[in-house]
Amino acid sequence: MPALSDPRPLTGEPVSLDLLNTRWMQDGVRQDLLTGVDGLHIWLTANGLADRFTADAATLERTLTAREALAVLVDGPGDPTAAARVDAVLGHGRIRATLTTEGPGEEAEFADPAWGPGWIAARGHLDLLRTAPDRIRACAHEACILHFFDTSRNGTRRWCSMALCGNRAKASRHYARSREA
Image (cartoon, rainbow, N blue to C red):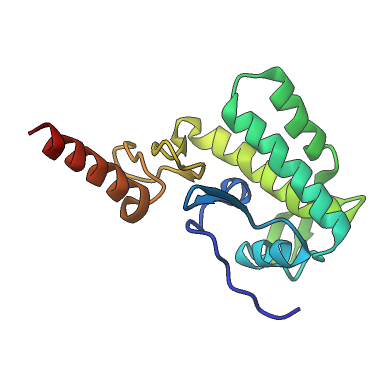
């Protein structure tokens, strides 16, 4: 498959949030990277999964199912229905303990490999919930739908990107203050 560029404004987040960030707003219009297998290939490549999984219709369908489950969970973290949806995705894979020449290890296994990318994203979200659930954030800009994992020292990051949403918010506040004066 030819190398295609990733059009998303925010990349490099943990895999579960990166999957959520396959939807974003651009000039007031909702964009979606995962409208076809080319977009799936871009996302798989961005997350180091393109060598392990095929960007095909079945994988796209299952990855979209995982994205929706994670979106519902992030929007309603205490909702048992949301947890059940993520748990249903996790039911399609498991971790097998291994012993390699380097020592003990773990390997993900899937009865249907098309569930692999979505399962890995859901499993990655469990790690975020285990380590710092309060650092999983939605961008504070009212027109942004991106998510990020706050790695700032004091845990007060508000914007997906200071250059994009943070700057827009500051410019809006400045404009409002200058109009009042």
